[in-house]
Image 1 (cartoon, rainbow, N blue to C red):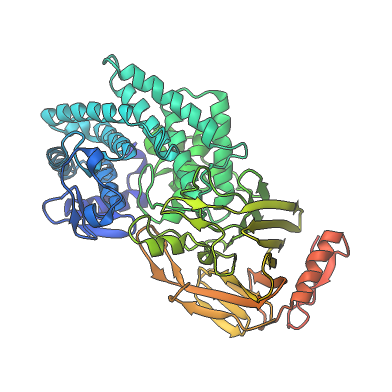
Image 2: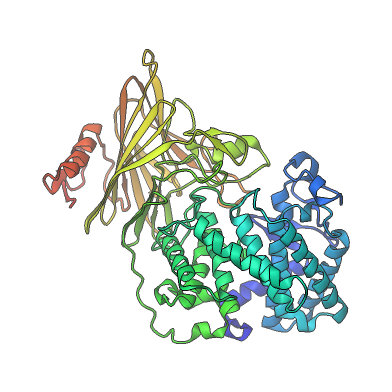
Length: 620
C-alpha cells in the first residue's frame, strides 16, 4: 500500500502532518491544538475544561460548563491521528512515528479506565477509536512492543464489550448506530474463535444491513437530510462492504448513495453544506472538508466499477489504496470523462441543476426523521457553484452545544439562501438537536431539458407560505421568483426577508446588482428593484459562515426586505459569468419569463429590458 503512494504530494503532506504530531500539535476540525508534552485526554483545550473519571453514565457530556465541548474532546480521542502516524511509518520507515504511537496509547490507557470518563460516554466514539487501533495494528503492529500489542488486544476486546452493550437503538439511531455496528462487526472479525466475538460479527453485520434499508432512501439519499452525514454514512457502508460479503441488493443501495453524492459534488467535486456538518470523517479527517467526496467517490469508483468517479489518480491516495490495496491503480491509463446531468432526487427533495462547470442545488425536501436533529431550517434554499468557486453557500454549522445563540443562527432560516417570514424560522427550535412544527413541502413541477431546468415548489408553516420557482437557463443563468403570503390577521403589514449568502467577496455595482468575484470566476447577483434597496452586510446579525465545524468568521450577506399585506413577490437572477454593466430586473419581467415557461409559450423572452446585455435568450 505505502509503496503505491510514496513520492506523491499526498505522502509528503501525510509525513509533514505526522511530524507535527510528534510535537503534539493536533489538527482538530478547523483548529490546531498544542497540548504540550503531556496529553490530557479528557481536556477541552479550547475552553480549558477537564472532567474526571466517574462512571461514564454519570458524565454530563452535553454540559459545556462542566466538561467542556465534548465534540472537541472526542475528536482527539478517536485516535485517527494514530492511523496517520502508522501511515507515515509505512511511508518512511521512521521508528519515531511508531514510538509516538506507543507513548500515546500507553498514556491513553492509563488515563481512561474501562467505562470511566467522557471518552466512554458515546458508543460511536468508542467504535471509531477501536477501528483506529485496528488500523494501527495493521500498519505498524509488527513494530510495536509485544507487551503493548497485548494490552491493545485486551483494550480492543473491552471496546467490543462496551459497544455491544451500548448500541444506540434508542438514542441517535442514525449514523451513531450504523458506525457502532460497523465497528462491532470489524471487532468480531478481529477475534476469531474468541467466545462472543462471532456474535459481534453477526449482530454488527445484521444491524448494518437493517440500517441500509432504514436510513437510505430509494433515491440513494440519507434520511438525515444532511450532505455531510450522507458522506459519513456512505463511508461507513462502503468500509463494511470492503471487509464483508455484501449482497447484490446492498451493493445496489451503495451505488445509489454514491450517485447521489456524485450529483451533490458536481463538476467541482466539492461537498456543499446541506444540513449539519460536524467536521469529522470516518477515515483520514485531514485536508479541506469540501474535498472529502473525492476520496470517497474514488473508492466507490474502484469498488463498484465506476471509473468515471475516480477523476484523477491522486484521488485514490487518501482512502482507496489503504482500504482496497495497490490493485486500485491497475488499468487506469484512460479514465473516462465525467458526465453530469440535471436530476431531481424526489425522496430528498433535492434538485441538482448542472451545465458544464456550473451547478446549483435547490433543497425542496422535508426535515429529517424523528426530531430532525441534523436538519437545518433551510427549505427552498439554493447553493450555487461555478467550478470550485462558491457563488451561493450554506453558512455551515459552527457548533452543536457550545453556544445556543450561534447554534440556532447557523441552522436557522436567515443563514440560508431562502426567505424568512415575520422574522421566524420555518420551524421552531426545541433544543440543539430538535425542531418542532417543521414545514410542509411540496414539489409542484420539475422540468429538465437540454437548455433549461425548472423547479416549482412551496413551503407552508404556521399560516405562512413561500413558493419558489427556479429556472436555470443553461449554461449559466439562474432565475428565481419568490411568492410569499401570510394568513390569519391581515390587518397590519408583515415583513418578508430574502437572504443571499455569497461564498466570494462582493462588490456592489448598483443598489440591486452585486458582483461575486473569485479567482476562478466573476459572477453577478441581480435583485428586483421594487421597494427598499437591498442591504449588504458582513458580520452583524446575518453575515457569518462556518467553513468547518468549530470555526466562525464574518462573511458577506445580502438581505432584501419587503413589507406589506397579502401576497409579496421577489425576483432575482444569478449570472454565473458576468461581463456586462449593472442591470435591473423587475418583478414584472421576472414573472413574465416564468409564466411563459409554465404555459409553454414562446421559446424566447426578454430578460433584462433595462440592461446593456443581450435582450433575448432561448430558454427551451
